[in-house]
Amino acid sequence: MAINRKEEIVKLLKQNGNAKVADLSKLFGVTEETIRRDLDRLEADGVILRTHGGAVLVPKEKGFEPPVLQRESIHLEQKEAIGKYAASLVEEGEIIALDASTTCLQLVKHLPDKPLTVLTYSLAVVNELIKKKEISVILIGGNFDSDSMAITGMSAENMVEAYHVDKFFFSCQGFDDQRGVSEPYEAHARLKEKILNISDQHILVADSSKFGKKSLIRLLGLEDVDLLITDTKMANSDVQLLKDKGINIVRTS
Image (tube, rainbow, N blue to C red; front, side, top):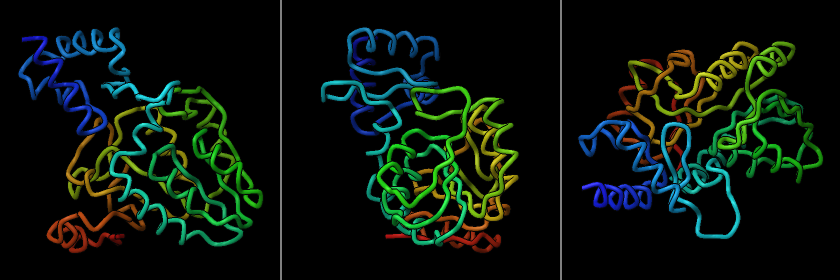
């Protein structure tokens, strides 16, 4: 029944933080259009917020919080550990680039206030960097997406081509030994590709829940990642599988 299905969807959102239409369709054995109608009704009732391709729960606190900040609490302990380690790799005077992921947001929170330059398309990242007076910030300009608090589009892609970056820290929707690193949104993937092209080092920051997942757009192969930073919940056998393929991997705790 539709009512029971909507109740189950809410339970899943409480457990996982977010859900995708395609996954819910497979789980409940109904069409994606049926799931979209369920989500539309739940949104009309003020229970959820629709995101691109899925949904998140409406926060209990008063006021609107963008989905990217809601997602920050998912696997928070792992993201904090990854972000702290990644921040330790940043050297004074470097030029680094950060994507709009919540893992890179944790990196910024652990970044010491020292002279360096940060190139980013994330307003959430910029908001954190405001507190750090020694860090110069270059915000890429383009089309604003309120869900991810990110700026993408052709003008952003063109702007990136003028720069050089020492290290690019980025996350993803999923990564595995076959498909590599993949992304769900074309605009984000295109911009990340541009930044990869101007960066000396490619550092993937992704918690273990993303291993084995595949998304719509292949960004790059794991062999093109200079360093993968994940967490200790990634199985030893999976870590060894990647190491056997020459992937430089660090697990944080």
